Length: 107
Length: 143
Image (cartoon, rainbow over all chains, first blue to last red; front, side, top):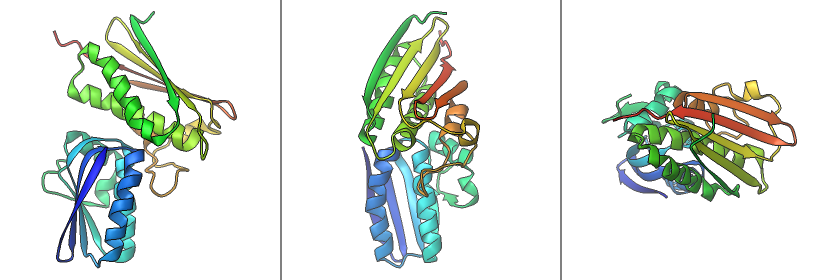
């Protein structure tokens, strides 16, 4: 199971992800995150992976999809809190060229 | 070489079974005392292969997915993940990074991840018959 907690501070939305992110869970997470992004005028969305215990390439798809959504809306996406396993996938995908990595993401 | 131990599981291609598949494989492999990283690599590779079956082999329909896990004397693990789905027309092309027919939410990295996280990867596919993915990884002895 994966969960997400959304915290808004001004025009910044932080999405705290936790649990296991696979293809099944990514679809559920999208359904929770996207309506919130679309309902606000966010300059910046941060995906926080510090509570994630497993992730496959569906997590990369989740980041890419939100990156494209925010690009279309004129906002930016950042990723933080990636552990070594998640960081390895981020490196492998080349997504580090598109998305800002910060706060403990050792890529 | 004959495996010293093996198990088979099969299940319906529902996405809710992705966690079951990697969890069941991980539970069986635990007897080799893998490191956290080795186990994470294998779970990720299983998750990718099973997701491919669900998304690509059985698009919009339910089918059966078959996993065989074989353990060998030297700590080698062989995973065979098979489906009887639509098959892959061009295996070499589908294995190129960032190639996907799965839509904008798929990264097209499944085979790249399997290749990177496992020691070897073989894909055999026949259109209309299905696909067999065979992967191996040797778990280092730590005593």
